Length: 78
Image 1 (cartoon, rainbow, N blue to C red):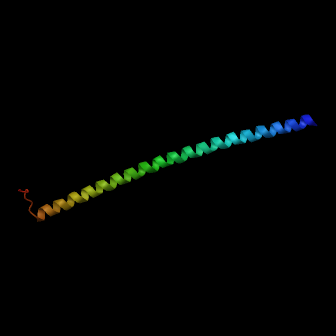
Image 2: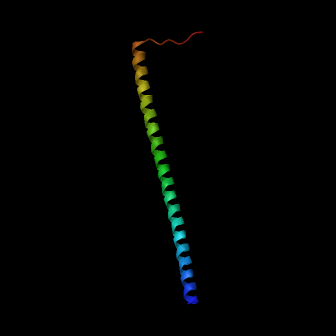
Image 3: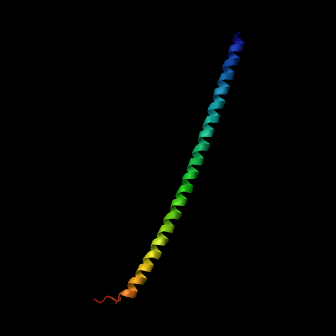
């Protein structure tokens, strides 16, 4: 009887340890994926910001062109 109890205890400890190791690796993989998704989101935000800045620059250039056609611009004198 004692031998059987020891075997069951050992089996339980091995199974619990194996599950714990698997769970830690699974959690690490999930965290790694989440971090990578964050990098992808940051890249997309950066691209959108650059696109918006380019659109703003183009709009500003168009406005300046229109203003310079309507108004005369003279160099500043001090």
